Length: 390
Image 1 (cartoon, rainbow, N blue to C red):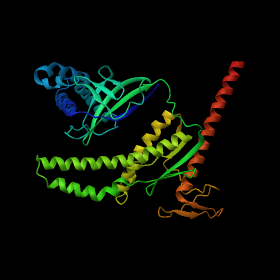
Image 2: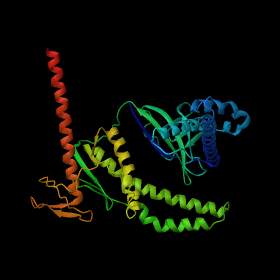
Image 3: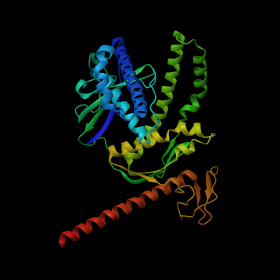
Image 4: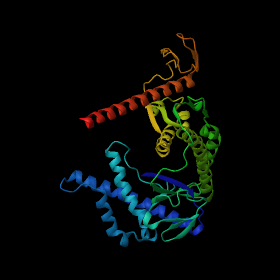
């Protein structure tokens, strides 16, 4: 069973867009109510240990008991808007206690507006989706998994002035959109000047989405700061700025999707470096350029697409000297500096491009890893055969 999702832009009328905005408001209100109650109950537990600790299930029961009398407006939209928001409170604290995320923060209007719908209140037909309490809403394209697998849920979100729906589906089998023939292994060296250099010679340019739009971004930000709060002109300026941020995101994701699709469909094994992005971001001179690339997003895309297309992802150790090793003879150039983009091996005399050499070394590491795994599997088979013969 393989879980995936398809995000499609909606084409709602004014009534439908108003409903979406109200549902997002209900989700935001429910989350903030649950977070405030959690904090209050936890403080009460600290002062008096006889009182129970807060938990998600108790919060949902408490909310359901008072919503008809105190929060009747939540009944105007799908029940999942409030229900899932309270579940998200429990999930947020669970991630916080496990050290996976920061302490939950209160939601703000216009920041990550979205709401959830369960599969029992949601269905897709042609280029339409059914929304509870609203009816059919038009889509700008067809759902590509129509008739394939089971729809799990949907999340409707707002980006600038656009509404999108992300439909999650569980597939019984892998998509037929597979590469005709895959090669063995590819090493992918990530960078800033070039987004990626592959061991097969393929190079992906870095679109530098933020740096190219930075001047306009500053101008629109300054224009927004000058507008009177609550005025119509401020809303217009805010929407212009949101659209530009959305444009920058789309340019960056376009390059990342093309690269991740290429390496996962053309190769059986993809070898990447386990980059310490958090440490790299501490470099004040490079932090903006590093953030503009989107290393984590690329890694996330390669991981889920490799699973989808049947490829493997291998990570080189964080301290593996991929750039310093000669890909021909294995000599390690200890004195190689970051500014040196090309170098000659003193042992064998080969001339190396820094990024191409690193990609070739990553590929060799991947081949070694795959050979070791295959030998281990063969040893297991031989051992099992011996037991069977006994």
